[in-house]
Length: 260
Image 1 (cartoon, rainbow, N blue to C red):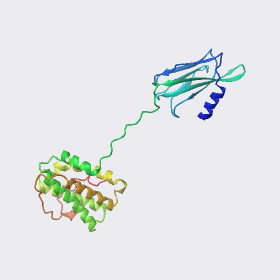
Image 2: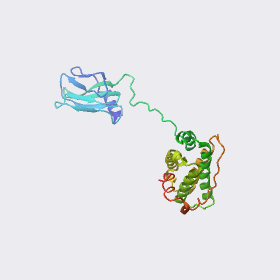
Image 3: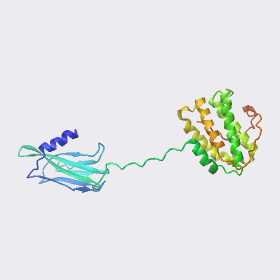
Image 4: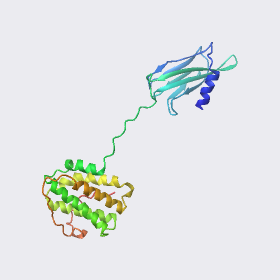
């Protein structure tokens, strides 16, 4: 449509000696501009815009003026079709909405790359965990994730729901034995880690193989943190059986890990 319109302008756009299309050469974006034919004459109006969704305009009741306003910067062309001496004539006026070197749309700023799960763990674990025993406790946490991975591989865990439950029990029990305050000190990290795991899994959140792979990533990332203290290894007894957990604790804490 625009190509044929510009062709029509070239063929029929000879300047009319009796009439003139008057209006501004530059317009501030969003402000009202008026275009009219001098001497006054009714016309059929059209605006060629830099994009299909640009601008708004209104024609006054006498069809002799066109009002224009648009927040979109760019080069616009107003076309007025009139009848002069019984013959059709086109009057053309081009103006700029904005600066001379306008671009229809600003160049978008590229988004920063998405942080991988492993990188997030390595950078945020030391920040979110407020424990004085973070080195030794990190090793214990890594072992918890490794235990769940091993149980999935040996088919002792066969569903995502069971993996979730066992992870909650193992983490809570291990940290409770490590320190009276460890559960509370690790809670902010575990809460955010749960969200990160969900994001990592996406539509694979019910796929046990995908869950195992992500849990292994977590174990590797936590385990790769520098150790400044000797590792405290606490034997975990009864952790394979959900019925052996202490009532009122494991069922509440770290409930966000691997939940949807």
